[in-house]
Amino acid sequence: MSKYLLGYDIGSSSVKAALLDAESGRGVASAFSPEKEMPIQSPHPGWAEQDPEAWWNELVNATHALHRQFSFSTQDILAIGISYQMHGLVCLNKNGKVLRPAIIWCDSRAVKIGERAFEKLGESFCLEHYLNSPGNFTASKLKWVKENEPSIYEKIHKIMLPGDYIAYKLTGRMTTTESGLSEGIYWDFKSQGVADKLLDYYGFEKNILSEVVPAFGEQGLLTHKAAQELNLPENIPVSYRAGDQPNNAYSLRVLNPGEIAATAGTSGVVYGVTDEINYDELSRVNTFLHVNNTRTQRRNGILLCINGTGIANRWIRKNMDFSGYEQMNRLAEKVSPGANDLIFFPFGNGAERILENQNKGARLINLDFNVHGRAEVARSVQEGIVYALRYGLEVMIKDMGMEMKVFRAGNANMFLSPVFRRVFSDVTGGVLEIYDTDGAQGAARAAGVGVKYYANFDESFIGLKKIVQIEPDKTLKDDYNMMYLRWKDNLERFLNQ
Image (cartoon, rainbow, N blue to C red):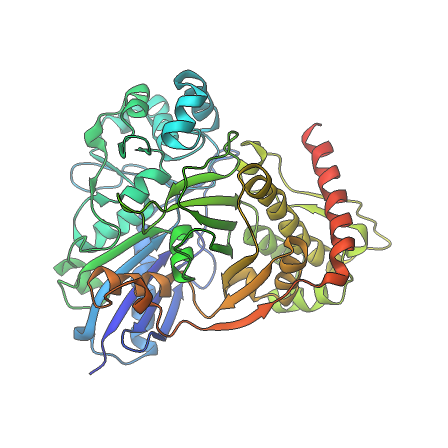
């Protein structure tokens, strides 16, 4: 009788569910919902909100789609794992009711609040203790609620990250993880505990944080109510939870110092693991606890994020009347590197950490109505995203001393594009390995570790396959270096305007 592991990936565009055969490590079913991207509300410029209940509804829909796609005995599900969009803020009252829409990762409203905290607490103190500026992260978003919506703040019983909320809906328990605390800037790396001084500065009571549970291990059991909605048996353990980028790294077997993961969904990320206390003094890239960090074995993840990645590609597809991404990629592939001098800045999805939290918007430069068409735009967007990632990689390599020789990515989102894969390898100069996995599968594998079906991390990667490896084209190295430097020069002039 087969045994299965169930993984969920709660994104800002959709919720994905994956069913993994535990013994073989083979994915047997996968579904996502909705078919069109979930809306992001922006009541004011720079704001980004979603209804947490919508995440749950789409998780239910994706689970029902799994049932329709693959016939399996629900009694044979061993455990559930959760991956989720990072840095969001969900506020619950004592009855577990959501008090306001979630303030999600790309919302920029708390930038000034975080900058003031960085100054008042002391830059050296923040970097030594939190390895980051409080910036535009979850703690600063909660301070915004406290200052601007006091009647709502007074009703808050617990605050949660998106994945914590989904775990609550599954188990009825209000919990979080140490990794989750670190992504909200609620974690003090020096004391190895809650960031008490930041909580005091912002005026938060410590009990507003949820109970801490291990990232791997039983976090609660599926309730009768949730089981009925999902058509699953109750008491299945939820045994893993992590933010989407640490989880993406896990899904790609990126667990040890020097290993690097990349993803290009709504945002684009490069995520490297280190065993050192390392930070960028300007917080352009950010350090968080990795999923396998322990008191005796330090594992931190250094995260570079470009907000406007897949969302930029999607905007072009929608507004330039492409029939789909495949058509965009085919046309882009016919255009030579450099897109006939068309330059694109993918900074149109909120404040960008890599730009020191400036919200500059996207831009096309050198557009010539007699030269450029949809194909050049499609190519320039993909190249511009990779140039922006390289711009951030310079911080990780030159300022933080990290090595970037091999990147691992899942066969998903923009890494499905042959153009994007090729440009990524050529512009970064690194080997790109593409694996047949995604965040939902990674969460399922990790859930198997959490219930000890797998004795160790290595066992959980049975069935993980590398499907292609792309080496940088050395003949294009000088050309791409020149094009990148031109892109960078234009960017710096743009930023100084």
